[in-house]
Image (cartoon, rainbow, N blue to C red; front, side, top):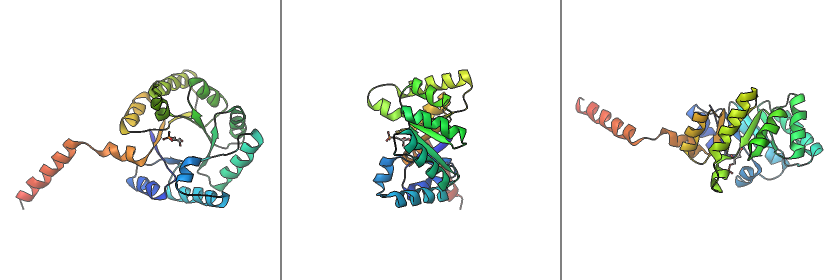
Amino acid sequence: MKFFVDTANLDQIKEAQDLGVLDGVTTNPSLMAKEGIKGDAAVIQHYIDICNIVDGDVSAEVIATDFEGIIKEGEALASLHEQIVVKVPMIKDGVKALKYFSSKGIRTNCTLIFSAGQALLAAKAGATYISPFLGRLDDISTDGLNLIQEIRTIFDNYLFETEILAASIRHPMHIIDCAKIGADVMTGPLSAMTALLNHPLTDIGLEKFLADHAKNQ
Ligand code: E4P
């Protein structure tokens, strides 16, 4: 399972990269705004800065919602760096754009997936990744994990190469559950990733090992 960190914060991206288990980064316009990145030039520089920190794919989202606009913006983003994956919303013109990008060898991440039907359409259009938003489904009292399972079954039935990128991860159990289902990738906050480190028996065990070692000095 690939681990992506879902942030535009360079310090957190560096910390995740230093941990040695990072495979990529996802961003979105809200995450860029949260870091105060304003204006086209600053946004472009920020994507390049992220690519220079992480070894792996970096999703950069288009703002346009019409076919021509998505193509123009996506081509410009893809030309910034070989690690860039163009993030395209799950709308009609987005699906058409996925097909176009696929035919041009430009890698894509279809975002805002909330149903198996949307995932199927995006896979048929040749998306590299599809991003079902697990946490946002859970937030409205529906079963996000069930969607991941449905998409896994469909993609396996037809041997789609599109990777399932479980997004909107909220906590470490989401990561474990997605790994059990067989999601190809998860993207979430650094806190969910580092929470996987923790177990009280590890802390107690280590404390005892160190204390016993100290006794023999
Ligand atoms: C995915 O690429 C999105 O950026 C992200 O996972 C959305 O997560 P949120 O629901 O926590 O905003």
